Length: 153
Length: 94
Image (cartoon, rainbow over all chains, first blue to last red; front, side, top):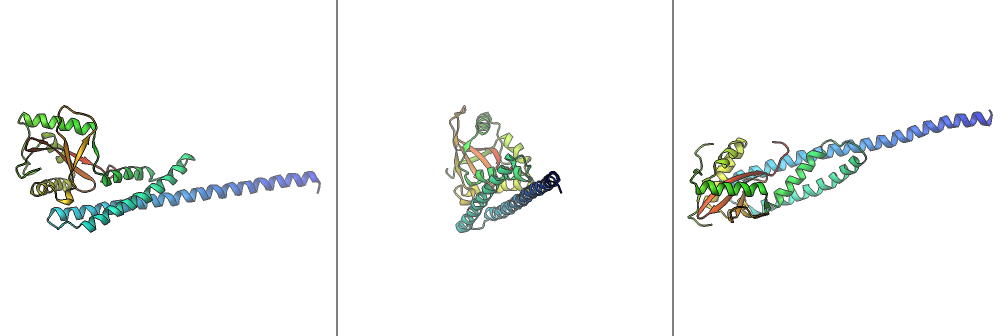
């Protein structure tokens, strides 16, 4: 076989190897992205479960259950740990998105992270909208336009 | 806060609460009743809200937790607590 023919057939083989290398790399990236999407979804579901449990506990406190500081601290700790994991995974999602991948469930988790942060740090500031509502409420009250707590809503 | 504190609802608060899911409406009422009985009950997580800017009035607001998702807010005007705001912390799905 002539050198020219070897060269031609090797070039063809190189192109095939290149194809498999790229395909493998893309496949690995795609699979990593799918794994991440599943993890983000699981975290969103876990948060919903935590919030439900927390809400049930709060209901019981309102119904007269004695406040259990240790239990409440455990909840706060769980939310903190959830937040820590969520922030790490959202960093990974950012990495995929910076490479033009779409990461399902990432936006929902970003919202959840912001909300959990707000929930963990309730000593927040009053927003402009809250201050405006407050001013209107005071003025309504001074005009005698507020009402007692309604018997039914 | 004293035992003499009375409470009133701003009309806008009545409407805001009316638009909340029914289980949260129940939380508002039970939380405010608990606040009346014991404003320092730990589960309410009562705390003042810091103003980011001055409004038309100097009165500061206070927030209580209904749960980790919802807060109810009031302002003291003399010895009257005027409830005027409900804030939802979680905004994804119900």
